[in-house]
Image 1: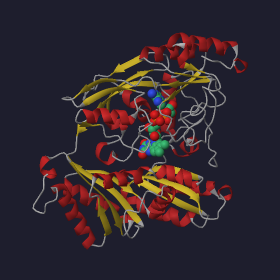
Image 2: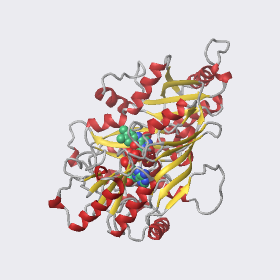
Image 3: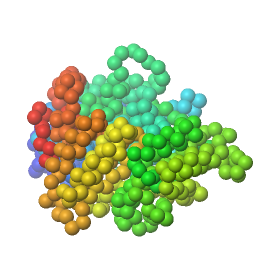
Length: 495
Ligand SMILES: Cc1cc2nc3c(=O)[nH]c(=O)nc-3n(C[C@H](O)[C@H](O)[C@H](O)COP(=O)(O)OP(=O)(O)OC[C@H]3O[C@@H](n4cnc5c(N)ncnc54)[C@H](O)[C@@H]3O)c2cc1C
């Protein structure tokens, strides 16, 4: 434990000595070198702050002891996973003394029940490691998104992460069937039975999922596992109009018995940015699609994996039949189907490169919104038409099958980002969302970045109930303060 003592008061020093006694001195990082990136800022680089220390417990008991100790010293705790969150949730706020409690050493698989199709893992396990572990046992842990190589189970639960397979498997909340957590008073909830049915009171699991560390620290969870698909058909479509996307989705679902695993909106502007920032990635269609859709359909049925009369796996023939009908109706203009695993992976790489491509492209304001499927086309056309004359270039992608759009505003060519009317564009977008019954936060969470919108648009009675829950469980406000629940009057929409 290397301290930078000039910065430290004796009370803080005593706290850190106490932490060292609990987790071992080497697991309390507080020297200037130790507190270098990534602990000083979030993934977006927008939020920065230096914690008193980063503390890395190995067991649930150690987490509980640290929580009790911090409470005794009135020091806040910011839980931390893979630090890929996009809303500033994992960065302390400047007017509180805080430690970052990193779950990275709690990364074990506790059990995997092949017959019961479930797995109990610790919160610090990297998402991809959890996927690999399920796969090694012939099963699927389906949670999939671009940051899966770094994001951790506890972070995914705390943000109720979504990603590209929600259309089939649901969000993290729907995959989770049990939780272990340390509450703000240091007590431990052990609800890891993994029962599929358990109506014995308030569902504390569901309260902690999506709470962004404001109600406690998740230390482990049980997840449902799914059977491994035996065959997949993956491709890219050019649609005549975004308004037809629900028709295409439903046709694929109907033909394949609900087999759609991914249905992602990838319009030309977004694919262009990806291809420019990552030159190894190519446009998937010869004539680039204005309204592009990346899709994957899968089946676990042996029959669907076997070849039919045309020599193709039956699942692929079902997809072809659906696409042919839609092409005859001129709803689909062009289509490509991956003919090899490499082509399939290339399409996935293209999809998962988008956030890094937009980030490399320059400054942008990212909205993570959801809408009823039928309202998506109207939102996009209204917004695109309104923001272009303001000097913005919208860069949109979306988990369209879930009605989730990542609508990013970047500067149009030769426009200076700083001089663009962002507050006006945001106000317009949020007015459209309210009119169309959408949500201003679909899957990334609230953190610090959406407190203004939360205060303005969340129903007052719901905000009051959230504040009452927070007050009941964390009366001293020490769990991840300044995030998720806006302080009264936090309405500055220019941020
Ligand atoms: C390239 C890229 C692509 C992405 N794509 C998607 C996507 O498609 N879908 C999606 O939903 N998200 C996506 N994200 C956002 C991000 O990856 C998710 O929010 C992820 O779930 C965060 O996990 P993490 O371990 O990195 O959490 P962190 O960033 O470390 O933390 C996130 C929040 O959870 C809290 N927290 C962390 N661990 C715990 C714990 N154990 N107990 C209590 N609270 C905790 C933190 O305090 C913080 O508030 C993407 C991010 C990137 C960088």
